[in-house]
Image (cartoon, rainbow, N blue to C red):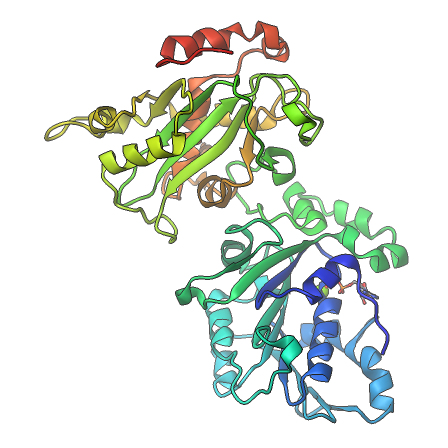
Length: 482
Ligand SMILES: Nc1ncnc2c1ncn2[C@@H]1O[C@H](COP(=O)(O)OP(=O)(O)OP(=O)(O)O)[C@@H](O)[C@H]1O
Ligand SMILES: [Mg+2]
């Protein structure tokens, strides 16, 4: 059997993660990779039990037993040599070494009962977003090493789970939350014990990463682009996970708005924004105002080396959650103030804005007063929700095709996890649903409203950015422009 994998497929094939998600775009070579991987484990580890799942039986067969590069085709040379045989009744390939590659499906939630006693050494799941989280958790609980002798060169790699998926089906939200949102693509990290404690990794694959398909069917890309709804095109063509029907900030696009962190030039004004929370998360964002000149060291940014003058850059965040959606850390206002100062470590912060609620006095000093006493001065943010929503949208859209709001890729817990998928208010299409986890968004809104976008001509010229300077200097506690 001779197979050569494309670069992204090889990255996944060689990954040392034990709970892998490969995918994103349609046609990125996902199903092919899972087949090759399954065969590889069967050949390299005698006696191994590999399960390849799809949600439904017809999809399973159509995808993996028919069509170019199907399992029969890939295994034909081995079958000819008597090394492997297909057993229709059991829906499995049995290898002479005792290894088994089993094809399985879980159409209904209750079908999990069929796999109650299964012992899975390698779990392969194709189109993971077709599965519910409960089904996945069940299958993961069946993954164990018992009785398997693992060759030294694969020590630590078994048992394992390899999944592949496009964004956008019933399981979109949980798959995104488990693999895509918590870490930068490609990074291997350990999931918490209650999440299985395995080494997780997301390797994005785009259509462009599968030269076979592009060579065989050059018009495929155009057909995808002709899907109609722009979100759907972005999901299937680019493997963009930030899609959901009724998204409030559908303008947000990681390719345009997310920057790899760089050293923020000292002369860019900085400020902070806060949305307070205790049993709910709080969100602190640190923002810099781009100065318009190229970055020192020629750091490269999407669309050129220079951010538009006046653009806001979220260069750091502190999101006060306990790792579970919409659950806060329950810190006191003084503890949060101390945490803020510790993160600023001598930075010159021009001013701070916060949600007006923290200035309310009930029985004794307000949250804002406690924070001021600890050294964090904040002023009331403008809190007109609709005006704020429009302001955030205007900045995401930007001017002359260049956004006026950017986020460092390190802002994973708050902004990048929660903001892209915030839903619209079902009762008001001009506002974000305030029942959703909207703390990083609210804080972003306060930040944007603290510097409503100046007209294009004024911001295009760094020398004319006096409005910003005047504004900052007025609010400054010991801050000066360079
Ligand atoms: N390394 C490879 N060598 C040869 N053919 C390949 C390779 N990778 C993928 N292909 C072929 O490219 C086509 C698309 O690949 P595949 O079906 O794996 O993509 P996919 O990401 O699963 O697509 P979909 O999103 O439609 O499920 C298939 O015909 C497959 O056999
Ligand atoms: Mg596929």
